[in-house]
Length: 212
Image (cartoon, rainbow, N blue to C red; front, side, top):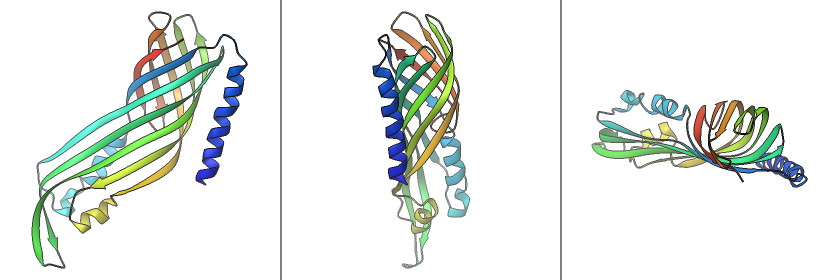
């Protein structure tokens, strides 16, 4: 399955690269951005605030890193741009004075530990442009990618580890509908952009974009 998905992504990228090379007036547009996703609320709901069944006690400190991303787009035609993107996001929870009982040793323990989850997404994207003025660009599109999730925990409690299913990695195929993509250039080569999407890797994002 992973080989099939990788082949589809490769054919998508190569196919558009062929169209790009046939154009003479193309513009390459790299960008960096910061965004928001449902990862934080989903993780908090799962870990903990179901924590009462695992005898967690305050304080629990959550450390959240928003979606950080880069994108590389090409204007393949007046109404079409294609490209690739990468995003990274993480969330960690530090639990202090957590108590657990070791059934084998028949002893109780207090410990401080940290649970962390990270998500990386690699994808290819295409934007159909509705408005393409000199400085303002508006469109919508589609992104197809792959998530790589990573979980880890420093807890010694086997019940918690089993509950969180931590210390492993998994991948998943993703599709994102980019409902709106806005770009405004202050000068010919420097601007800002924002996107609103449905699906992974973000619901909304904004950042700086350059073109040459």
